[in-house]
Length: 330
Image (cartoon, rainbow, N blue to C red; front, side, top):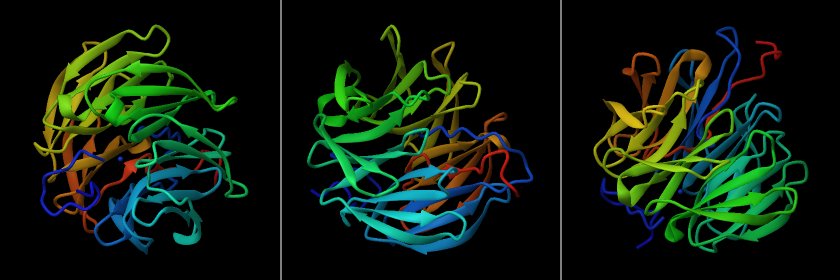
């Protein structure tokens, strides 16, 4: 079975944040959520202040993953069936280039300095490092079976890769492009989330209905039960709560990071997958594959405040909310 062509609401997990996005500006500046719609080959652009779709961008075949850069004013979109990465100009909301990768790109992440784009090739078990200035692949790393979620440490030094079929996270030193260690986690890790201080990583263990919460320095792990078939996660700005999408019970689990337990379950749309947080507006955006929409959650009250219609089979795997730097003009 092709894991990216689904014909029922049930998800095949033979398959793709830094889902948490760091934003600092206030209401005077727009921020945008880039939602990949795998079923109709589009990206919906949502103004997160007004919770409205402002643009629908026709892309390559089957868009999946998202990474964004305020510095470059770009959104990068993976196409698992199209074997490449679309580049969107975030000022004009138009595609300006396409990077061929000759593989099956799913997970995607940018270094904090926006110089290197990392892309996970699901079927060939490798990570590609792409220079954002030239769009050339500068390095390839064989990692493990079925690499999916990617996150990068705030200091720009380490890349973490969820190897789904190996039940592990590979830690890669970016300077040398070498694997430094492998961290065993729960069964079938898929989405990853990294805390803003860079000390905690959450592995979403799809086939175990749990997350592994890992201290990066000590490697101490806590296993926390979530909902049915969790998929992606995002830390709130204070790193005290973690939001986890549960694809098969149409919900989001709110995890108290200190207490290491679920403190609330929020009902959202059908088959929620990607999640990112607009911290400036206290809003978590959840892409719902099964209902073709996005649920918006207030991260303080844990209530769904609105639902936004998007495209067919909304996915948004990765860091998909872009907010301009605080010193940018409105």
